[in-house]
Amino acid sequence: MISRIKANAKKRLTDGWARLAAAPALAAPDIVTLKVSERTRLVRRLDYPHANLRLLVTSTIELHTRLYSSQKEPETVDWLERTFADRSVLYDIGANVGAYSLVAAAVGGPGSRVIAFEASPFTFANLCANILLNDFTGRITPLQLLLTERAGVRSFVLGSTIAGEASHPGEIAGRPGLDIAAIPLDGAVRLLDLPGATHLKIDVDGGEDVVLDGAGETLRSPVLKHLLIEVESGRTDLGRIERTLAAAGLTRVNVVRHGTSATYNWVYQRLDESQEPR
Image (cartoon, helix red, strand yellow):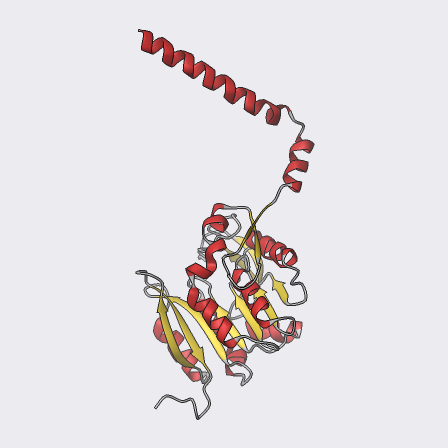
Protein backbone atom coordinates (compact mmCIF):
# COMPACT_ATOMS: atom_id res chain seq x y z
CA MET A 1 0.00 0.00 0.00
CA ILE A 2 2.76 2.43 0.98
CA SER A 3 4.77 1.62 -2.15
CA ARG A 4 1.67 2.27 -4.30
CA ILE A 5 1.15 5.67 -2.64
CA LYS A 6 4.80 6.57 -3.26
CA ALA A 7 4.53 5.50 -6.92
CA ASN A 8 1.39 7.56 -7.43
CA ALA A 9 3.01 10.59 -5.80
CA LYS A 10 6.10 10.21 -8.00
CA LYS A 11 3.90 9.99 -11.12
CA ARG A 12 1.98 13.16 -10.16
CA LEU A 13 5.27 14.98 -9.59
CA THR A 14 6.70 13.79 -12.93
CA ASP A 15 3.52 14.74 -14.79
CA GLY A 16 3.58 18.14 -13.13
CA TRP A 17 7.14 18.85 -14.24
CA ALA A 18 6.28 17.69 -17.77
CA ARG A 19 3.31 20.08 -17.96
CA LEU A 20 5.44 22.89 -16.58
CA ALA A 21 8.21 22.28 -19.14
CA ALA A 22 5.73 22.15 -22.00
CA ALA A 23 3.78 25.21 -20.91
CA PRO A 24 6.01 27.88 -22.55
CA ALA A 25 5.93 26.12 -25.92
CA LEU A 26 2.18 25.55 -25.74
CA ALA A 27 1.51 29.09 -24.66
CA ALA A 28 3.90 30.75 -27.11
CA PRO A 29 2.36 32.32 -30.21
CA ASP A 30 3.16 30.53 -33.47
CA ILE A 31 5.27 33.45 -34.63
CA VAL A 32 7.56 33.10 -31.59
CA THR A 33 8.03 29.38 -32.19
CA LEU A 34 8.86 30.04 -35.84
CA LYS A 35 11.36 32.78 -35.01
CA VAL A 36 13.19 30.53 -32.54
CA SER A 37 13.30 27.75 -35.15
CA GLU A 38 14.67 30.11 -37.80
CA ARG A 39 17.49 31.29 -35.57
CA THR A 40 18.49 27.95 -34.09
CA ARG A 41 20.74 25.80 -36.28
CA LEU A 42 22.82 22.76 -35.40
CA VAL A 43 26.12 22.85 -37.27
CA ARG A 44 28.78 20.20 -36.80
CA ARG A 45 32.19 19.51 -38.32
CA LEU A 46 32.47 16.86 -41.01
CA ASP A 47 34.89 14.06 -40.07
CA TYR A 48 37.32 15.01 -42.86
CA PRO A 49 40.64 15.59 -41.05
CA HIS A 50 42.41 17.87 -43.56
CA ALA A 51 39.99 20.81 -43.70
CA ASN A 52 37.48 22.46 -41.42
CA LEU A 53 34.30 21.48 -43.27
CA ARG A 54 30.90 21.90 -41.65
CA LEU A 55 27.44 20.45 -42.21
CA LEU A 56 24.03 21.74 -41.24
CA VAL A 57 22.33 18.99 -39.22
CA THR A 58 18.54 18.79 -39.36
CA SER A 59 17.96 15.03 -39.20
CA THR A 60 19.25 11.93 -37.44
CA ILE A 61 20.67 10.51 -40.68
CA GLU A 62 22.78 13.65 -41.08
CA LEU A 63 23.88 13.43 -37.45
CA HIS A 64 24.77 9.72 -37.46
CA THR A 65 25.76 9.09 -41.10
CA ARG A 66 26.51 12.18 -43.22
CA LEU A 67 28.79 13.72 -40.61
CA TYR A 68 30.93 10.55 -40.79
CA SER A 69 31.21 10.34 -44.57
CA SER A 70 35.01 10.02 -44.50
CA GLN A 71 34.74 7.04 -42.16
CA LYS A 72 31.87 5.60 -44.22
CA GLU A 73 33.73 5.71 -47.55
CA PRO A 74 37.46 6.22 -47.01
CA GLU A 75 38.11 4.98 -50.56
CA THR A 76 36.09 7.88 -51.98
CA VAL A 77 38.07 10.39 -49.96
CA ASP A 78 41.34 8.69 -50.98
CA TRP A 79 40.27 8.76 -54.65
CA LEU A 80 39.63 12.49 -54.45
CA GLU A 81 42.86 13.23 -52.60
CA ARG A 82 44.94 11.25 -55.12
CA THR A 83 43.34 12.44 -58.35
CA PHE A 84 41.40 15.68 -57.86
CA ALA A 85 43.44 18.86 -58.21
CA ASP A 86 43.49 22.44 -59.41
CA ARG A 87 41.44 22.83 -62.64
CA SER A 88 39.72 19.46 -62.10
CA VAL A 89 35.95 19.28 -62.59
CA LEU A 90 33.80 16.78 -60.67
CA TYR A 91 30.21 15.89 -61.52
CA ASP A 92 28.89 14.58 -58.20
CA ILE A 93 25.71 12.73 -59.22
CA GLY A 94 23.63 11.90 -56.18
CA ALA A 95 25.46 14.47 -54.09
CA ASN A 96 23.03 14.20 -51.17
CA VAL A 97 23.86 16.98 -48.66
CA GLY A 98 27.27 17.47 -50.28
CA ALA A 99 29.83 15.84 -47.98
CA TYR A 100 32.03 14.58 -50.84
CA SER A 101 31.44 17.72 -52.89
CA LEU A 102 32.86 19.70 -49.98
CA VAL A 103 35.87 17.39 -49.71
CA ALA A 104 36.53 17.73 -53.44
CA ALA A 105 36.27 21.52 -53.28
CA ALA A 106 38.71 21.59 -50.36
CA VAL A 107 41.16 19.22 -52.08
CA GLY A 108 40.99 20.88 -55.49
CA GLY A 109 41.24 24.43 -54.24
CA PRO A 110 39.74 27.59 -55.76
CA GLY A 111 40.69 26.57 -59.32
CA SER A 112 38.55 23.41 -59.24
CA ARG A 113 34.82 23.03 -59.91
CA VAL A 114 32.18 20.68 -58.56
CA ILE A 115 28.76 20.30 -60.17
CA ALA A 116 26.56 18.69 -57.51
CA PHE A 117 23.40 16.98 -58.80
CA GLU A 118 20.69 16.06 -56.28
CA ALA A 119 17.11 15.08 -57.13
CA SER A 120 15.41 15.30 -53.71
CA PRO A 121 14.24 18.88 -53.05
CA PHE A 122 14.41 18.29 -49.31
CA THR A 123 18.02 17.16 -49.36
CA PHE A 124 18.88 19.73 -52.02
CA ALA A 125 17.97 22.55 -49.63
CA ASN A 126 20.61 21.37 -47.16
CA LEU A 127 23.15 20.82 -49.95
CA CYS A 128 22.76 24.51 -50.82
CA ALA A 129 22.99 25.49 -47.15
CA ASN A 130 26.24 23.53 -46.77
CA ILE A 131 27.79 25.23 -49.80
CA LEU A 132 27.01 28.62 -48.29
CA LEU A 133 28.10 27.51 -44.82
CA ASN A 134 31.56 26.61 -46.13
CA ASP A 135 31.87 29.62 -48.45
CA PHE A 136 32.21 27.39 -51.52
CA THR A 137 29.79 29.26 -53.78
CA GLY A 138 32.56 29.80 -56.34
CA ARG A 139 33.59 26.15 -56.36
CA ILE A 140 30.37 24.11 -56.05
CA THR A 141 27.34 24.54 -58.32
CA PRO A 142 24.21 22.76 -57.01
CA LEU A 143 21.65 21.51 -59.55
CA GLN A 144 18.33 19.99 -58.50
CA LEU A 145 17.87 17.63 -61.45
CA LEU A 146 17.00 13.98 -61.92
CA LEU A 147 19.47 12.57 -64.45
CA THR A 148 17.79 10.10 -66.79
CA GLU A 149 17.97 8.77 -70.36
CA ARG A 150 15.54 11.40 -71.75
CA ALA A 151 14.28 14.86 -70.81
CA GLY A 152 10.88 15.52 -69.31
CA VAL A 153 8.97 15.79 -66.06
CA ARG A 154 9.18 12.55 -64.10
CA SER A 155 7.10 11.31 -61.20
CA PHE A 156 9.73 10.50 -58.58
CA VAL A 157 8.77 8.48 -55.50
CA LEU A 158 10.65 9.71 -52.42
CA GLY A 159 11.41 7.33 -49.61
CA SER A 160 11.35 10.21 -47.14
CA THR A 161 11.11 13.99 -46.94
CA ILE A 162 13.97 14.01 -44.43
CA ALA A 163 17.16 15.78 -45.53
CA GLY A 164 20.05 13.37 -45.99
CA GLU A 165 17.91 10.37 -46.93
CA ALA A 166 19.30 8.43 -49.89
CA SER A 167 17.22 5.31 -50.54
CA HIS A 168 14.46 6.71 -52.74
CA PRO A 169 12.48 4.19 -54.82
CA GLY A 170 12.52 6.54 -57.83
CA GLU A 171 10.14 5.92 -60.71
CA ILE A 172 7.53 3.25 -59.98
CA ALA A 173 4.78 2.51 -62.47
CA GLY A 174 1.34 3.17 -61.02
CA ARG A 175 2.65 4.78 -57.85
CA PRO A 176 2.28 8.58 -57.56
CA GLY A 177 5.36 10.60 -56.76
CA LEU A 178 6.63 14.15 -56.84
CA ASP A 179 6.94 15.60 -60.35
CA ILE A 180 10.49 16.87 -60.86
CA ALA A 181 12.63 17.98 -63.79
CA ALA A 182 14.56 15.17 -65.50
CA ILE A 183 17.23 15.46 -68.16
CA PRO A 184 20.09 13.38 -69.59
CA LEU A 185 23.50 14.38 -68.28
CA ASP A 186 24.71 15.17 -71.80
CA GLY A 187 21.68 17.43 -72.30
CA ALA A 188 22.35 19.27 -69.04
CA VAL A 189 25.98 19.81 -70.04
CA ARG A 190 24.97 21.36 -73.37
CA LEU A 191 21.97 23.33 -72.13
CA LEU A 192 23.73 24.81 -69.10
CA ASP A 193 27.17 25.11 -70.76
CA LEU A 194 28.82 23.13 -67.96
CA PRO A 195 32.59 22.64 -67.96
CA GLY A 196 33.65 19.18 -69.12
CA ALA A 197 34.04 16.65 -66.32
CA THR A 198 37.47 15.27 -65.51
CA HIS A 199 35.90 13.25 -62.69
CA LEU A 200 32.52 11.54 -62.43
CA LYS A 201 31.08 10.22 -59.17
CA ILE A 202 27.76 8.36 -59.36
CA ASP A 203 25.85 7.25 -56.27
CA VAL A 204 22.14 6.98 -57.07
CA ASP A 205 21.11 3.78 -55.28
CA GLY A 206 19.93 1.65 -58.17
CA GLY A 207 19.48 4.12 -61.04
CA GLU A 208 23.03 3.89 -62.37
CA ASP A 209 22.13 2.39 -65.75
CA VAL A 210 19.58 5.16 -66.43
CA VAL A 211 22.14 7.84 -65.61
CA LEU A 212 24.73 6.21 -67.88
CA ASP A 213 22.19 5.86 -70.72
CA GLY A 214 21.99 9.65 -70.85
CA ALA A 215 25.73 10.26 -70.45
CA GLY A 216 27.31 8.70 -73.53
CA GLU A 217 29.06 11.87 -74.71
CA THR A 218 30.40 12.61 -71.24
CA LEU A 219 31.68 9.06 -70.79
CA ARG A 220 33.46 9.02 -74.15
CA SER A 221 35.00 12.47 -73.78
CA PRO A 222 38.83 12.33 -73.55
CA VAL A 223 38.55 15.03 -70.88
CA LEU A 224 37.02 12.47 -68.49
CA LYS A 225 39.88 10.65 -66.75
CA HIS A 226 38.39 9.26 -63.54
CA LEU A 227 35.08 7.69 -62.52
CA LEU A 228 33.76 6.22 -59.27
CA ILE A 229 30.40 4.47 -59.27
CA GLU A 230 28.53 2.78 -56.43
CA VAL A 231 26.80 -0.47 -57.42
CA GLU A 232 24.80 -3.01 -55.49
CA SER A 233 24.70 -6.69 -56.37
CA GLY A 234 21.11 -7.80 -56.84
CA ARG A 235 19.89 -4.25 -57.45
CA THR A 236 22.22 -3.04 -60.20
CA ASP A 237 22.69 -4.68 -63.61
CA LEU A 238 26.41 -5.15 -63.05
CA GLY A 239 27.15 -6.65 -66.44
CA ARG A 240 25.46 -3.78 -68.24
CA ILE A 241 27.40 -1.20 -66.22
CA GLU A 242 30.68 -2.99 -66.98
CA ARG A 243 29.96 -3.13 -70.72
CA THR A 244 28.92 0.51 -70.91
CA LEU A 245 32.03 1.80 -69.17
CA ALA A 246 34.37 -0.51 -71.08
CA ALA A 247 32.85 0.69 -74.37
CA ALA A 248 33.58 4.27 -73.30
CA GLY A 249 37.29 3.41 -72.94
CA LEU A 250 37.35 3.32 -69.15
CA THR A 251 39.24 0.63 -67.23
CA ARG A 252 38.31 -0.59 -63.76
CA VAL A 253 41.30 -0.18 -61.47
CA ASN A 254 39.84 -0.85 -58.03
CA VAL A 255 36.86 -2.45 -56.28
CA VAL A 256 35.97 -1.70 -52.66
CA ARG A 257 33.21 -3.51 -50.79
CA HIS A 258 31.27 -1.67 -48.10
CA GLY A 259 31.69 -3.90 -45.09
CA THR A 260 29.82 -7.18 -45.51
CA SER A 261 27.06 -5.65 -47.66
CA ALA A 262 26.40 -6.23 -51.36
CA THR A 263 27.37 -2.63 -52.12
CA TYR A 264 30.65 -1.79 -53.85
CA ASN A 265 32.49 1.23 -55.18
CA TRP A 266 33.98 0.57 -58.60
CA VAL A 267 36.83 2.92 -59.52
CA TYR A 268 37.59 3.50 -63.21
CA GLN A 269 40.28 5.39 -65.07
CA ARG A 270 41.02 6.29 -68.68
CA LEU A 271 44.45 4.76 -69.13
CA ASP A 272 46.97 5.77 -71.78
CA GLU A 273 49.12 3.16 -73.52
CA SER A 274 51.86 3.30 -70.90
CA GLN A 275 49.30 2.60 -68.14
CA GLU A 276 47.40 -0.21 -69.85
CA PRO A 277 47.42 -3.41 -67.76
CA ARG A 278 49.43 -6.20 -69.41
